[in-house]
Image (cartoon, rainbow, N blue to C red; front, top):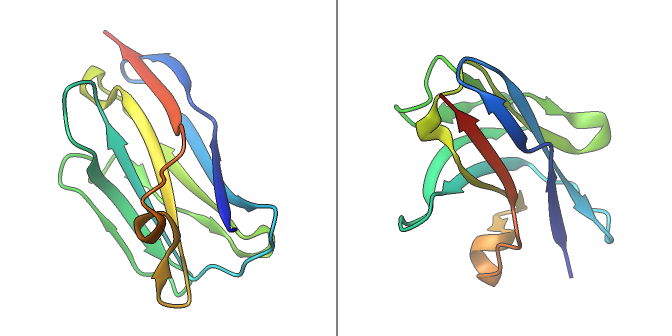
Length: 121
């Protein structure tokens, strides 16, 4: 079964930067799009950003101008570069990957543990 693994979370002060990464583990997959989501305590999971291997990207209004989504095609790894972090960015971050036309985690309903990002003021 295809799995995705996030890494790179941590604690940072407001204004700082972090870079999250997401890659498939186990079975080798060639993914053509990536999505990033986050969930804060007491809130529903929300969309953060997405990008395709073709270079199309889309970010939520709350992170535009601060977050970007570079993709390392050779290693089939996606990144969420987060700059100018704010305390309200504190959340558990999750990634999803699209294989063909199927979003792996959205289809399975299993999102894993994600990676914690904590931004202090």
